[in-house]
Length: 203
Image (cartoon, rainbow, N blue to C red; front, side, top):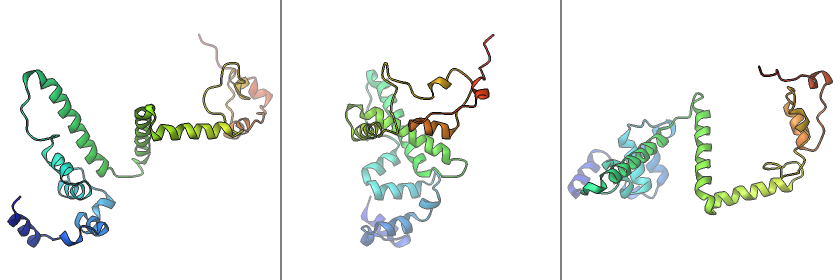
């Protein structure tokens, strides 16, 4: 980009070169309040400003060009692999826009939480080789196992499956308080009439 173009842009719109170190100013004045109330996935002017400032020119160039890397000739034997790579990058780019424009509403908040848990599962699967996240899960499991009130994971062979195992044979559904009591080592007191209920036999 020619320096004269940059100077013209500064005079017509704004000049923030002397304030690039003031992140709060750039985010709230240049990108604007839309970043807090919700961006549209096609607000490219705002999205490009945001990614250009926060992630630099390489990320910005990739988002604008819609391709990973510059132009290159693909040989005949590499067409399928090149198209597959482009498709993967395009999905990543679209997901990047979607993540920044996803709005938290009453109708979508449970979906957002569900997506976050799916992301955690992916991170856990990626970290099976010894990542920090996987190590944290192991530590949490060790902590819960060390507490007498909880038991994590399936019962070991020959181990008592728990005080609610006797309830599994019939139709009685323990209440939450019953399950908490059982988890703490207490006994679930079941009304004899309820305990006598049986599942319908299969026909």
